[in-house]
Image 1 (spheres, rainbow, N blue to C red):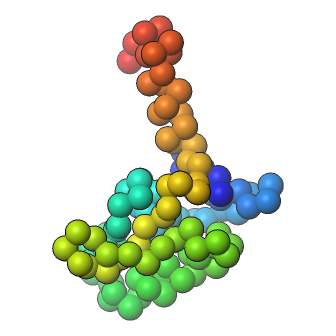
Image 2 (image 1 turned 60 degrees about the vertical axis):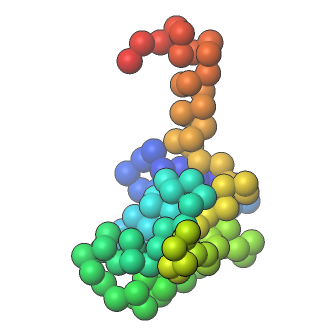
Length: 116
């Protein structure tokens, strides 16, 4: 799957079709992608959304899965190092525009030629 998070509304590209993911689902998508394969706990997501119930987080993640047509289980139910339940996105099966940009920007040929 290919994700774009360097825009106002994040999107996923599924079989060449762009699916925009706005609102709270887009926020969750960005958080999971920016965690780069580490589990984001339900408590972390609850805090991000001003204390909503963990069951609401489960419902939101379920809706996110539907929105991105996650038939391959890209969003994985997981636990963090302390055993707290959460979610992660398997970085081995996704491309994220921000990470690809970072790789190119940090490549030796580019990094030496460009000053930020």
